[in-house]
Length: 324
Ligand code: SF4
Image 1: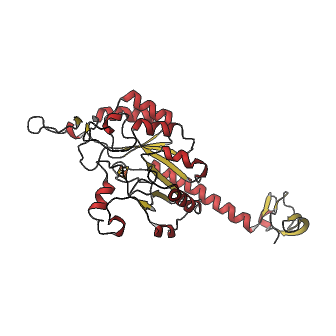
Image 2: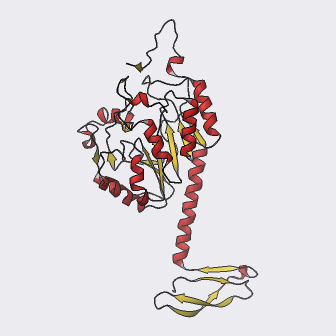
Image 3: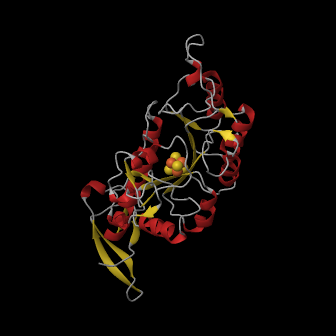
């Protein structure tokens, strides 16, 4: 069969048509006969090769994936502990050194999973070569490295390149990244496969929760202001922000940060694990949701009163984390 045939057979008047085709192998034109079903008489018909048809099918699958992706987002339910658009997780790299006090992944690694070879040495960052045997279906949304931070500054570039090379083999699957170090996205932006969704966690606009002297220090991750700057200057169509677990913030500043970053979606939710974080009052969170909802898609997760709003002031003394 000749390659590259893409011929518009004009409005069909008879069943057999002669068309001129271009053969790639010797760059010569050939005549071919095309037979059309009588059902097409009176209609315009395109003739395409098997190869083109298969490419077209893939594109349609991809479009369908995008449709399902956004449909899933729009139907996301509040209260889920996981990104509810995610069909599966994939952990080619695990472990993290940011030591967030609320990290459920580290907790899991040090308790339930502690006898697994992967976590024998605790939550130490490591590459898991066996994960590169994994295959992914078109339309899936895969959360990459939810058991660590793939973009931490300690991760060797070759590990990241290996992950990007693997996901390039699955152009019709979506791969969702989430980090507290979005500076590293910039380093790989020219190599980033188009099906990557780049996210950053920014729990608040207040840097001091993350600085020494604040007790308990929330994490040793890059400060929120640094994450904001990295996301704001990142040129990528599918950016998202996770404000989870939310911490108290300055309404106007935080709203402006998110506006300037211009994410296509924002996740927002309170801590699910009772870490007694410095949470904002519920009414303030509602104002933030309203502000952000004016310019982007907001997906609400666990939305509830702050833990210290629910305590009886006469029977319990709230332990609010504060500056040391
Ligand atoms: S950045 Fe993520 S994986 Fe790392 S300690 Fe914090 S919550 Fe855990």
